[in-house]
Each structure stands twice: as structure tokens, then as C-alpha cells.
Length: 169
Image (cartoon, rainbow, N blue to C red; front, top):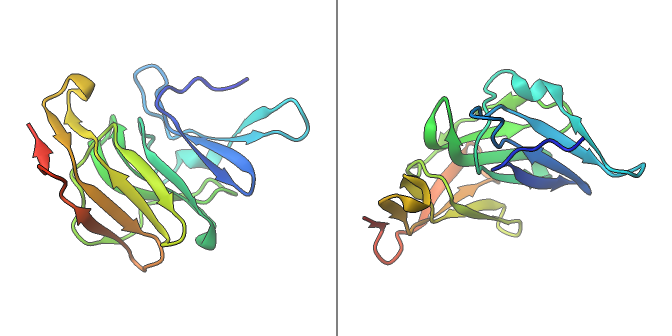
């Protein structure tokens, strides 16, 4: 059965979709599901170790597969432990091992509802926009753009653009 996880995010690893985070009732469990499509019909298989270590789930996380380093990366979102945040976690797609790596540079303000794109050519996760509180009915919305540089050790946040007004209030 497919897990119902509103606010979960999807990344593809070697042609296999992986579903991370989302809500389970009022909880944000560290759920990682692999969606196996062979044989048909598709089956959702939970990767069990994603529940250990630095594991905590997120609602609407930025979530990508960093192929050169064979890892899933999640950054920003909201959960019951940290609230709105831009902390970074790395997940091994084969084992589900979760770690919170060292990250250099100033960190973006915690946010939810952000957009993101995986810039594979430049090896970075680009995060832009989002809100700080109150969701779409809130009072603080971001207009900035950040990049999480994947090809650097340690990973590094870079502030690319403050946007026209920085933070709209």
C-alpha cells in the first residue's frame, strides 16, 4: 500500500523513486520509502534504518539525490523537533543511514513552503522563497535564494541573492 504522507518529497535514485518525510497525523516521522516498480504493480518498501541517528522527518523538505556521492540530501522544511529550519541531513539510499554533516557558511533562516531545484551541472541544491510562520496566511515571506554546495567538503551554504525586498513583512 502507498503511504499517505502529505508534504513528503520525492527524489529518484538510479530510476527508483524515494519518498521522504511528510506528515503522519500530527507527527513528522523520518520515513523513507523506496517505490519498486519491478515487478509490476508498484510496491512501497520502507527503508527501516532511516529512523535512527540524526533521523527526524520533515514537512515539505527540499530533497535531492546527489549522484556523484551516492547520497540523498534533505535541507530546510519543518518538523516537530526543530520547527522551521534549514538544517541538512544526508541519507544513504541503500541502508537508510542518516547523518547530519558539517556545513560551512551562514545558514538560511528556517523556512517552509520553499521551492528548490537540483542544479546537477554545478553540483548544488538551490533553495528559494518560502515562509517563516503562519503558512500561506502568514506575515513573513522570503524572497532570497541560497545554494547548498554539494561538491565541497564540508558542504557549504552560499547566499546567492537577497531578492528584491529580502524579507516581505
